[in-house]
Length: 277
Length: 306
Image (cartoon, one colour):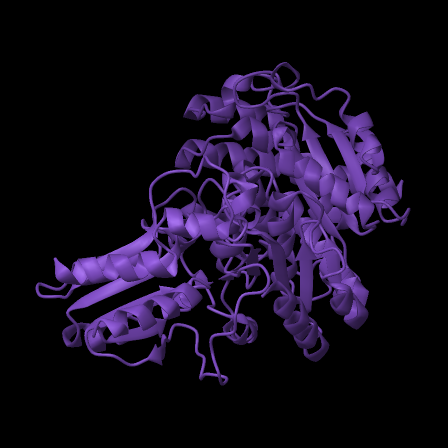
């Protein structure tokens, strides 16, 4: 029952956030909507359930670190950070505006509370996260590092370099979540690179692997809870997701990698999400 | 120089618990002394330099002072984007050390040459670039880099390079050191090619040419004051580096001089715009590019006679 209450709360956050992301994309002409919507549930579970963070003390040395390695989903991260209280929601009125920090990718840490790394070039965020995880061991500070990757991002060689080093170093406070939405910019991800079977790949690279439905909060919470049980290995959560999740006419339609919704589509989306205003 | 590097880094690691060493699977035995100080602060990142640079940035953003070490092309050109984005864009105080720079590993072929690293690193905002002329400058550079909060690239040679400085000089990042005063020509030198320059200058002085020699160990931030203060005193400025004539020390000086309406003539000595396809050791390569003592003396003499 306690879990059900939690899941309902998380789903409500997700619905509100999806509506805000879609509205903001329309208003500010921010692309990568499909990529944002596929990882919203993972972000919500991290920020409203898992991460040991205090928005009032974003530089706490003991905070958990989160890096959005698939930096093009920044419009989703900005909304989540604001809803979690790192900065006022009204700041997001500046999204896409010249001179603001709310562009298409996260800025560097000093420019926005809650950001640990400026990503956008794929294959960078995860290895930076590994550095942060190793730093906790050297500095003897007890925190964990989480990062969300795209399946397209797993094309990058640096991801697999990082995977091998993390396993060799037996890093046990490092968890990656692959937002496996089966698409990259121009094609099905499996048509571009031989990704199958992604879970076995991570396992073969020496990681503890959980394969879940990335929109099922029971499964996400369960996997994140298990990720803290130190197995002596880094943890990979392969989250099967749907690009454009939450809006029927966006789901699994890769045109929404770049398309910007018009006002009618925003209204329809909000109706489907059950968000009124 | 690389033995001195390992020794100095071990000493600094003993003094500063933030110092870490990341190696791209090289330096077998070289870092035993570092590991003795603290094995947990040594990380062999394997033959995976892109990841190594990103990991270093993550460490630096969390309070540590990582020093990344491998052969120069692999710690510069191979992972340039990681240096640009993860290190420089994040202003992460990572120290990147390239060993066997320039033509030090000439016989290994162009895959192991680094004749463009100064040029590309110069383009990165916030990056300090140091090319010490000997082991003494290298030790001073390493200490200075650790005391600063900026990303730093240090370009070192291999082993056995002669020590140039007879005493420990006053060293400051961005300040050239006058090795010898003179009056006809100002010779600005970066890196270990200094040995050949000193021999060349001896020969030039037998022809009555008085040379001032400066060790321009820091390419960025460049010592514009030194050049500005000396510009009117000399008939010619010569830049010498074991690097392409484009974009390195010669490039910095040429850019600077171009803003003056009256300035001394400038001779750039370095490698040409080509890869070295034939086999040859460092001495062979120096002769090929007129960077041996005789070649340097000949080029300067002929330039002054034009």
